[in-house]
Amino acid sequence: MTPGPRSKPPVYRRERRLPRRLRDLTPTRAFNPRTFFREMVWKALLTPRTGSPKPPAFPKLHPGQIALTWIGHASFLIQFTDLNVLIDPNFANWLFFLKRIRHTGLKVEDLPPIDLVLLTHAHFDHFHRPSLRKLPHPRIAVMPWGMGDLAHDLGFERIVELEWWDSFSHNGWKVTLTSVPALGGTHPARRPPRLRRFPPRIPGPPGLPRR
Image (cartoon, rainbow, N blue to C red; front, side, top):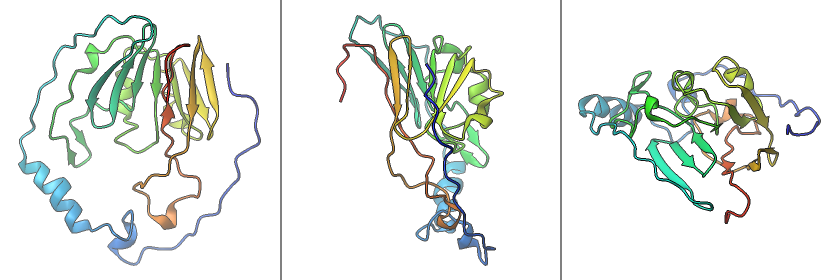
């Protein structure tokens, strides 16, 4: 079931101005490029990468039960009795010049068949195209409105884009896209009023308690 027709989202005009200094290219006024480089780049380069992926032992679930596996960073695997959901998969050791200092908990080839991929927003550490291409035959991807063009060549059988509070239902489960304000890496002068940060509400089979 695809969300019903709706009016075209409004077009917002962005303030356009040329940056006059390095700070104008940073996410917020509180952002300090020197601190970022020292803490996120230089210290990471000097820190040995730890941890190691382990073959998972996924539990056998009974009706009403779920299993949650933290893969690393913002990547999670949520398993229901008849549904495997992957959130923001990222298995990379490097993101441009940013180093991952701890290996992922499992390898992409150890994932079970993925029925549903939830992508919360289009930042590189959450929407990692190389990781998405490696997924084992993902069927459906649900993401915020406007991200579909970024995912059309990643192997999904179906791509669903949702606006705030839209829902998508399929085979007895349902995903609702909610709006939660968040601080992102976009400079305020270039940030549209409608932010692309929408944590999806976790789907679940009928009868499963929800908050």
